Amino acid sequence: MRIPTTSASRPLSPACSRAGVALPLISELRVRRPLRPLTDRWQHLPVEPRRAALLGISFRPLQAQALGLDARATLEALLAHPFQLVRLGAYWNRMEPEPGRFRPDDLDWQVEAAERAGRRIILCLGAVKTFGYPEFFVPAHHLARPLREGTLVAPAAHRPLLAAAIAFATRVVERYRDREAVVAWQVEHEAVDPLGMEHSWRLAAGFVEDEVLAVRRADPSRPVMMNGFLPASLPVRLHQWWRTRDQGDSLAVAQRLADIVGIDHYPRHALVGLAGRTAYLNGAGSLRRRRRLERLFAWADAHGRRLMVSEGQAEPWETVTTPPNPSGRAMYSCLPEHVISNYNECMRWARYGAPPLYAYLFWGAEYWLLRDRTGDPRYLQAFTRVLSESEALRTDDRAPDLA
Image (cartoon, rainbow, N blue to C red; front, side):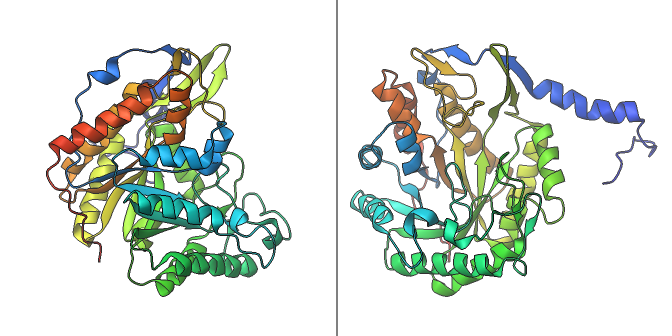
């Protein structure tokens, strides 16, 4: 890494270098009580027009079940709202629970429900990583032993896993490629980043590239979408760079391999609990992130690619896996008004370059229904405000040409 220099081209002193990292960290760190009072602020925020962007959600049946909801009823309730696009996941270990047994029933009813509602579908094939906790859905019979921590899962050293992943992805494509509602295939999820804090292994870019080639062979008519996490704060950006520096992070790999590049946008998230308080990183409005976005939009414009927000934070990201649901309160990392303000921030990104966003998918739809059922409709109402008011202000509802 090149050492930053002053205007006189002298290396910065160690103290100045540390200050260059410490100052952004201090500005982005918040120590707050996680429980916040509910307000009506979400009712008064202006809503940015969506312009050509499709609006939608990601549906996580496992998350619905974790929240105590019925998955079918949850999806049907969500599809009653007038958004345009839904992302569904093909969870490998659920669709292939035993060797030689293929069970698409669970995904079939989701696709059919979306079709009946007139929604377009992005179908995430995985195979190794698919959105929704725990993000790793390889059937046990395809792994003789767990993937070794700290390793790069490369094709040469993991040929049986790669062959099985390609076979599964191809089978899913072949099953659903005649469905007109399916508009894109997603290959892997945050493809080459480590799997959260629980596992340090990573997929090699070559592994993912072989999967992409197989999907294109199975269906050359539809675009491939790949996504990556866009750090909202300097500490997370440095941590991500350090762990992925040998081949680039998932956004960089998506730029090399995909037709549609998805950005996962989480401005606020918890780090650790501290005696009744929580330390958060809050990078909303970060200048450093804005500069990366400017470069990303310029690249998309120059190369004829599409950008979308594959995950726009609309549920809390606290120190636990399942978002808390406190009675009469909300969580600091995502209040009801953030459902709107996070969306607004992303709609303003298009000002950084010529290409409009292809789509914006809200993340957390199952949580809104839980909140609604337990007496707080604000998250769901904030979502419906965006749908109605962004629609009234839209400038173009034509789907972008992705051929």
